[in-house]
Image (tube, rainbow over all chains, first blue to last red):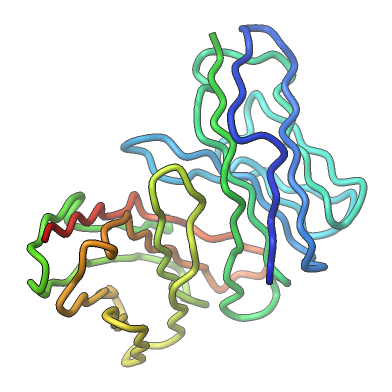
Length: 115
Length: 111
């Protein structure tokens, strides 16, 4: 069965802290994504990666960075957390963007609260 | 600009009361339209992919249809366990494009 695992389901951090959200997939997928989900705004793409060490900005990359050193792992980094980054963060993976209609497989989500 | 709009935002049904959710989209060439189900506090779960106008797909009480401008998710004789948020997403034809999601329709089915 396909699996996308996010390291933390719930996190509480303080303003200015550096935050790492980890995501691992066991499906040998090429593409990995980070979204954030907020009430009334839906899912918004932060960053995605279509290969190891490659990354592309999504719609809202400001305040975030990512790292993909291994194919199965994609990390989202908040260099200096702020209260407006309080949100549900969702990691996803897909086989290959170049194929038609490749669905995303999502993790369970990481709910981050920044105080 | 590529865009996805879902309606209604929320829908309350009685058990057995069939209805439809709408997903309108504008995209510069459609590669695929996706439907997901999301339960509270969980990640979205894939339901369907539709590729071209006229295509239909079914799964239990759900049936998804696609035209050139919109997609419908028909729910026949819903049960309380169908209560969830249903998300629509599109992928444009340009190489390397990620999915664009609508804001979702939250369905509540009461017995």
